[in-house]
Length: 576
Image (cartoon, rainbow, N blue to C red; front, side, top):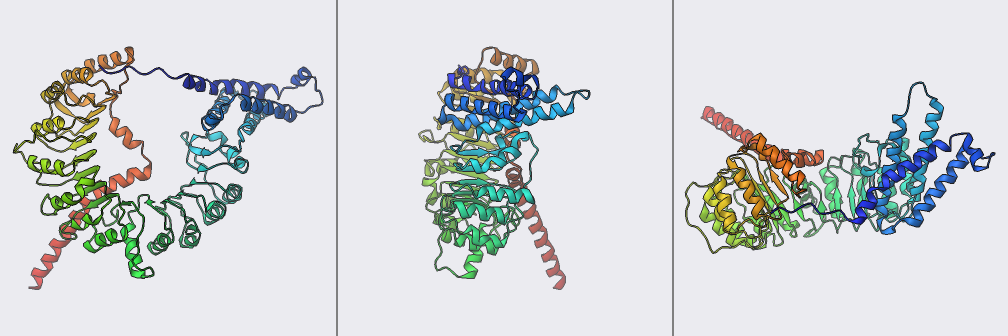
């Protein structure tokens, strides 16, 4: 039976009360310190409102320091700011056009003053996506006093209201950065400039390991001498900047420890520049991921060989195959550390994918085959025997034979925990894969898979799928509540099940009753609709754009190349 939701810990309950406690306290103090009668109550008639507010802020700060568990300071920082923000909301709700606007403004300023209570030098992480919109400018000004920060992320907040760092604001921020000399992780998308980058590197070049300046148009070729000073840099995101490929090549040559270039679809191009410049003899780099170009998608054989020679420690690779541009995938076999491989296009034998997997398969943990043709049950058996350590497999839009073929009952995939199949495949294939995957936890099936109640019933009764934690079936005409009840009975760890609304065998009434049952019995399972779509929408805009480009771009490029070849043949016939 599906498990019940766990009871929250005492720590979680205590932390959940902090925003309300802070809101009530700071709102009350903000109101009374701006009232004239409060001076008489305190007995200090000569004190100004600012003096009274400073005293209350100091008391509040002292109370926090005495009662806070300092190992929870990052969580407490966010919760206190949330409480102050809720105080702002409460005061704004009470505003009326006929009220005293001056008093209203003073109360809001007083609320803002309580942010001084969280000016903690020992704070290690500051993520502006967690800072409420109305407090961001104040926290920006406090950065020089937060000199213990290791991670500084200048991300837009959840409430929107992105504050651009332009002009004087950018200059002030670069000055504030000069007070921080231990930063390991820095992120500033869109607005990073050479002044900000210089200030950061001058003070934290020895400690900086992760740098994200994506889409910053103020970063150009003149920034390369500054970037190469960060000799310990391991992760870098420079997508969308004004750096040319030659500048990126020189940057890579100057960063010996760099391992992760985020969304670096330009890697093959900058390696070509390094080879052309010929300033380094037998260059070898620590880069771990390869992504195909999002402008021309298909890489030639010499580019693939260059990547293998210069980046032999690649662990993750996505490659888009084209028979006329790179007829063989075998050069990839030179990557001895490959653990994650994704191949788009081609056939099992004509692209020499079969030979490639014979070489790199034993080391693979994740394999994705997209639009690969000529797959059969025999080929699957061969693939799984070779990639016996595989943990995750994706078959997307692949062409499977309708022939049943030979079954491999003795084969076991002891490490396979995630399986994604979004292509037309026989239910006998599915039953066999389920039976040989005793550790399967995540299962995603597309609308074209031939799945029905009998597949799940037979698999569950034979002991398969019992460790399933997530099942997503995009759409099905053959699944009903029978499958749902069987999963509830045999899969105690099941936490996510969808998209039940797209299963035509389940009526709206049955789905409503099931969700009510899960709510009443406090079952720890997500039965909501469009779970996959919501995860996609939860990605950043750049990640969504990259995913869409890599899914649709190669198809359009293949069409363009085919049309171009047809035109060329027509011209040749006319000339003859």
